[in-house]
Length: 88
Image (cartoon, one colour):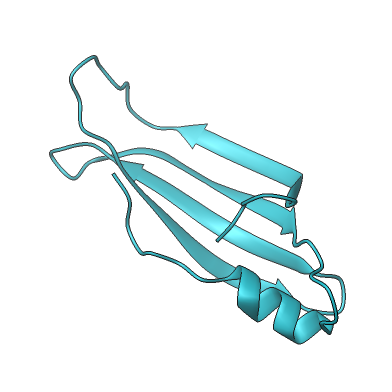
């Protein structure tokens, strides 16, 4: 799961598109755009939508994936990329 414990944000950009008001229900979706296993980096896209399905925020981040014991870069990245899909 990313970012998760031990992950380090290297860059992040956010674009606020619409206001979020008290009582709004926001759904966040994170998508893996790119994996650089030799550098242990993952590029992520984030979108947030309100209860009407309208985009309220989007952005990208680059995250350094932590190492695990006795693992090469590919298995480190694969183990760290377990996702649960959309979260509310």
